[in-house]
Image (cartoon, rainbow, N blue to C red; front, top):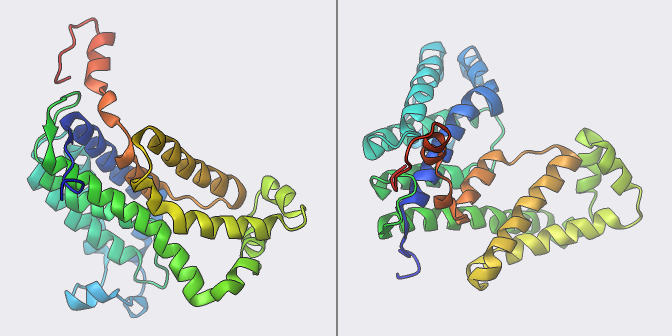
Length: 279
């Protein structure tokens, strides 16, 4: 229980909150703008996820999709300021949750949003927090910890799924080769020309995903290096097969010492004003 509620500086919560809610706004207009097209998608193509069926959510249409889009865009930007963290936080979570149900109910479900959804659900429980505040909070510690757990589960369960459906043959399959053929870059083509390298990469991916929970037990002085390796893995993934895990990378920032980021402090300093702790 002490590990699950390990106190963290409130400034870390404030910075993580700003990052998460700003990403939600960017996600609406940059990363997943295609969700808006479901406003005009025929209703018979809508096959809601299990949670959508259990909640008897309505079939998406222009009013629902555009209503959620504009409301969520405005409220996520407001939530990024840290104002009304519970009221705005819960509202943003519920709207984005429905937005994801709409997005993933037409035949494709992305697994890179679990950590972000958990972060959106947990942040309202962290309470008020200001940038740069060094006071520690157990509620904020819990919010970050459950987000971290979701991030690592994304890796570990991805390996479990590969082995469950592909078996050990997945290790020697042509999964990466097919991905390179479909959406590979020049770098990926160069890598694919090296005999055996793609098979070695697939074995490395499985090993990395299965061992990812070790991030919780490595000494603190090594943890940042492990998280940096996680980020580098996604840099390589994007630079070779152009698959972006942007929402997952945002959630993974829960491992970082974000309390050092103080945007208001920087703005006041640039403006020649005296900085404060809460800036």
